Length: 142
Image (cartoon, rainbow, N blue to C red):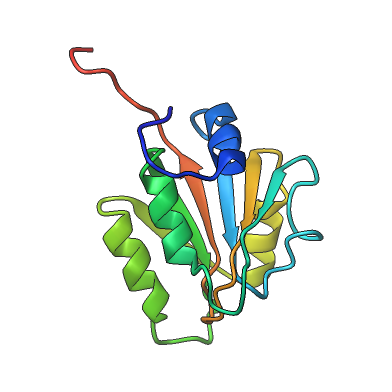
């Protein structure tokens, strides 16, 4: 499944173990990674200091090594304006289906056995968590 890029050995190893349909959560600086993620998921803590790295920086690294086929983000129904971080996700994942859901639905999705990797970043922007689904890599000529 690996393409190229990303230098974090924990992320590379966990990504190499992911198959089609497995999922990866990039949690913001406020996301409760320890209590709201599949207990069997590999956890990687990248949160260095407030705002470093951001969730879209982490996503950019993942996109360099994996095909992503879907994404899910938190967006409560009462929030009417699309958060700016969603634009960054759309730019990094052109043509990828990105859905939104409420917080409880998102947390439930993060607890599923398909979540194999949980990455803590330090993003402080509202609604900057993203759960991505690993896609397939097709060989040319097939």
